[in-house]
Image 1 (cartoon, helix red, strand yellow):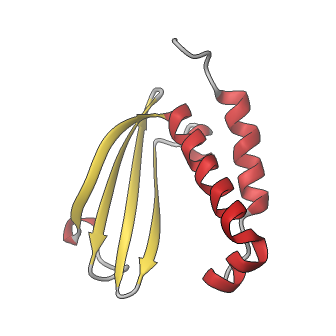
Image 2 (cartoon, rainbow, N blue to C red):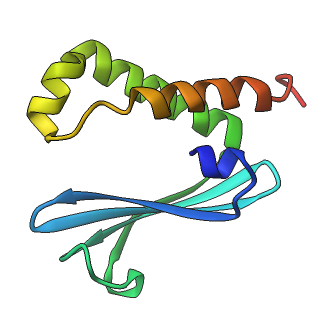
Image 3 (tube, rainbow, N blue to C red):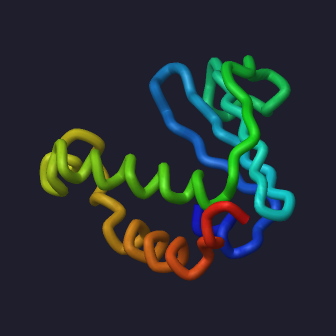
Length: 112
């Protein structure tokens, strides 16, 4: 999300749900972001081997706020130590706060 707010035109993220993987691809043009979610049999599969299970056009500011809300909810639900125990990784606190700061500086006034 930080890459998109910083002006990157394409980025992706992948979630492993072994043996399946879910890949979310973001294409930014101006203030809009086209997003696709693919389900793949294996995480190493090429995009064209996946099944598109969702796609949609989103506003970059709305998307960044939604990502922040989701991570805030995960932190509130599980706490940072349980997050690590559950997913084997540290909660991305530093990255979340960087996204929160960048989101605040990027947001356009509503209605424009």
